[in-house]
Every structure is written in C-alpha cells, then in structure tokens.
Amino acid sequence: MMESDISLHLPSGSSASSGSLRAKEARDLDDFAQAVLAGFAQRPRSIPCRFFYDARGSELFEEITKLEEYYPTRAETALLEAHRAEIAALVGPGRILVEFGSGSSRKTSLLLGALGKVPAYVPIDIAADSLKEAAEWLSGQHEGLTILPFIADFTTTRALPPVATRKKRLGFFSGSTIGNLTHEEAASFLANAARLLGKGSTFLVGVDLKKPVSILLPAYNDGCGVTASFNLNLLVRINRELGGNFDLSRFAHDAVWNDEAGRVEMYLVSLANQAVHAVGRAFDFSKGERIHTENSHKYTVAEFQTLARASGWLPVKAWTGPDRLFSLHLLRQG
Ligand code: AVI
Image (cartoon, rainbow, N blue to C red; front, side, top):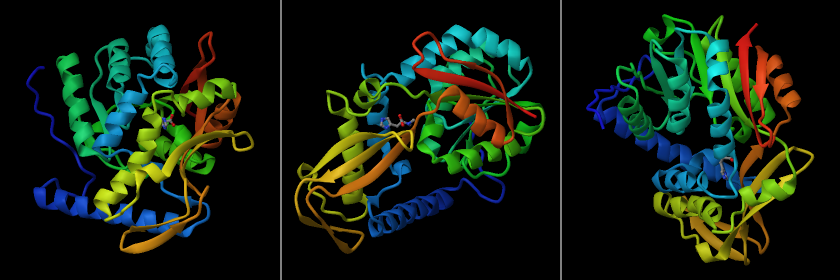
C-alpha cells in the first residue's frame, strides 16, 4: 500500500487530541448503557442496531456480505459495475464525492474510477478507525486522490468541513443502510443530506427492493449461522462493556418478514425463563420473549422515489438490473 497522510476532520468545536478521543469513548459507553436501559424498559425489549458494529460485529458484517444467501452487496456492486459510466455522465465532472458511512470501499472505488478526477473525497463516519482504514485503502487504489475523512454522525451532522463546500457535491449512501432507519428517520436523513450537500447537488443511494420472502429470509438467517453470531454479538458486547452475564446458549437468533411494515425484523429470543444482570440491574426474561435488534426496510422503486420527493430530492433515474434484487437511485435537488 502507498504511504499516505490522511488526517481526520472533526466537526468545528471538537478536537482530535487523545484526551478528547478518550472522552468520546466514555460518551460512547454511556450512550450504549443508556440505550440498553431504555430498550430493556420497553415491550418488546429492544437494542438499537447501531450497536452491532464493534470490532467483532464489523468483522462479522464483512463475512455476511460474502455469504451466498446475502445478495445485497453483490447485487449493488453488479449494478454499479454495469451502470457506472452512465451514472458518471448524468452526474457530470468536477464534483466532490461525499460518502455517508465508510464501509463500502470497493463500491466507492468503482464509483471513483468512473467519475475520473474528483476535487476531493469526503467519507463521513462516526467510527474513526473504520474511516481511517477505508481512507488508507482508497488512497492506495486512487493515486493523487484528496481524501478528507470527517468524523461525525451522518444522520445528524449539520455542516461539512469548509473545504468540502467549495465545489458542487455528489452524495453516496450505499448498502441499503437507509433500510435500517424507520420511514420517518429515513425522510429526516434524506432532508438533512439535502441541506448538507446543498443546492445543485446529486445523490446516489442504494436501496434493497421488496421481493419474495423465500429470498429475503435466508439473507437474514444464513445456513452457516454468521448472521446469528452477528446478532448474538450484541449480548457479548453487553457482557464485556456493561458488566452483563448473558448466557449465549440461552438466546437464539430469529429473523421474520413483517409484511405490513415492509421490513425484515431481527430478534434475539430467550430460550428459557431467566434472570440476567447488566448495567448494574437485574432483568427477567420469559421463555419465548424477544429482544428486537434490527429493522431492514425494503422499498419498491416507486415507494423510495415518493420518500425522496417528500424529502427535497427529485428522482433522476433508478437502476434495478434484470434480477430486480436491488436498486440504485440517482437523485438531484429540485
Ligand atoms: C447494514 N445493513 C444494511 C444490513 C442489512 O441488510 O440491513 C445489516 C444486516 N443485518 C443482518 N444482515 C445484514
């Protein structure tokens, strides 16, 4: 890999000193503890899916993307490969590429290759480590690329680093991560992205399509049990970080299709009546009780375009491929 000096940018008002990074770790731990306490106080109990991605969870997700049953990563990459030249032509030259999240280096690389010379690439992610890793890999792939990694929560951040505002921007949000948000959250994310990317911007969004349950469910309940380990890793994380004593053999992974809500839902199911300690409290779980851990919404092309229009974007074009497994949407600001 080529030597690179990629310094991380933080929202104005914050600093990247080791003291402030330690303070951030303490805030993250507190955030996790608060979320578990709040989620366990509800019925059904829940844990927000953003906590899947500790180091082990990120590794397991990487493994999921390579599974035979998990089609989204392959299908989206194939769409990008097939249509990148047309996408680049529709977007036009000279745009700063702003990526929401940094976990999709291969897809980003395909897009960067098609766009030609971009003034800068700005990946936004809350996880400094994955941001740095992805930025280093991409700088090895694209010589001379200016990378401005930005540590921020892309669902809420209000401003880009000033250098990223000098030229028009193309946003990129891949992997159907938008499906992990509720419809209200997705609408508010799209509206915030419209403000952040600014007038005249374009936005490329990857969205998983509705399809038969016989294809959907195995993608979230694979034969090798990788998704089960990914889901159960939440309990491993509670045990390690929040002083929990969950017995992993007494919980099981489950994934169901909720037709009314148009989403796959993941749960951890208690296999016995049991008492568990975590965050200094005791929690009783009854046999069969479910902890809700993730929603993965699926959209038809028309449903997603309606959501985009309601959030300040105009659909330019959508690509779905002959298998209709996944969709790529190009949007522009009205
Ligand atoms: C990251 N996200 C889009 C994945 C999905 O398909 O909803 C997370 C995932 N959960 C289970 N498998 C993959």
